[in-house]
Length: 515
Image (cartoon, rainbow, N blue to C red; front, side, top):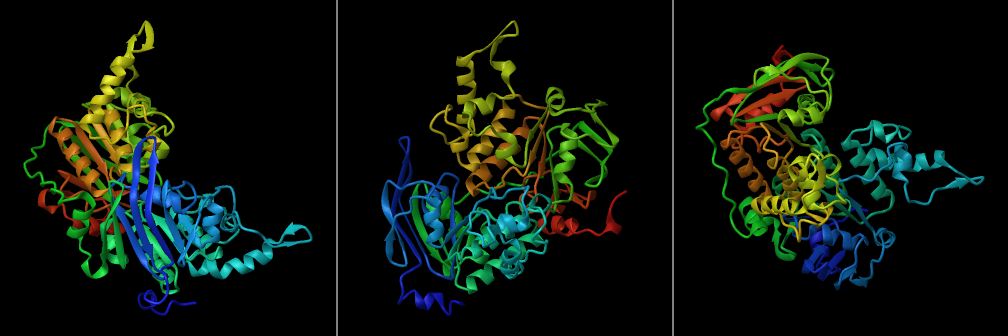
């Protein structure tokens, strides 16, 4: 049923959800200090804040994955106790986390029905009848793949749609979306925005959690801002501006990164000649210079990550060659690349860059064991040196953690990213590759990481930054290569590095590709 006018109904009926005075402490650290949040039916409500502000904690409490120390949650005006995820679902709440929940070896239909009661016939699950019931909901959210297809063969965007379909099958009245566009292309994001508007118009409330402020400004009717475990502002649509959001998130204005127009090209560190690994990397050639920040832009799927994997030795090229400081360079593994002086901050830091159950110190030192063992003849860890080096990096990068022994999985996304970068600072590589360095990172941590990248280049390190966000590259990079459909289609320098130029080149036609 369509919600006729959520704003008008709010005056006569209670909001769908009200959370008041929510407090939560973990091991002496106050994650939430009495936050509040109100959601109306048929509203897209933004939840923003720096990494570590408390957004994930309040979501876990609403989902029944954590329990508040104080405060209350009311649904339709009635105070409820949410002690487990099943109760949250029964109350009409569904949660789509950044790390999507699905089982790769199962079909689309089986994943949609995960955890739900299933119709049976003669003691067997009646998948035919279930499919007939699910089909219209799947088509409504834009799932075009057959329900019999295995989800391992689908894109991230398609798996997002599966999670939305699952929520609707569960008759969700609230869907919480955590960084929904982090791994989506511009076209896929637009499709998601259309679906969100359809859900909103039918009375479903959306809690939209994102660091992408342009999306918040575009989609949300109201925004709640968390800072340091407090809810510091609720901003109505009529008052929503980017400066207002930034000031509320960080407690003041963020100093923009000044464009570096004074870069003078230095000696070549890396030369890539015709490197190819089809279908994603086709005849790529470029040079990287000492002290340069080289951006690689383009759409998701253009071949950017595949290119840097070849440089780093994670994959082997089918053709082409590379020179490192004038000498043949063909790493057969990442370990060989590391020994040669390369470092990589991967796109998926949680899956590929960190051991989440291990400490901050462990993750910082995992590529630097030679620096903390007593001697090659006595391969025992020098714990005092390990502590000193780790503490220095934590201090220099302003990593927010209770201790260097805190499991890195408990840190916010921005602080986890700083740990991965800090690992390579301990090795001081000749070339540092950062793949989507600020994905899922708040605006304050993003500025910190950008300043760090520029300072590394100023010290003579060559840096490659891969980013699908065209707004990220102009002020950060000395030069930008734009990829489209496995080719480099444009090279931008100086004042020619603009958002519009990057976007236009990203959609280049085949006729414009370099050969």
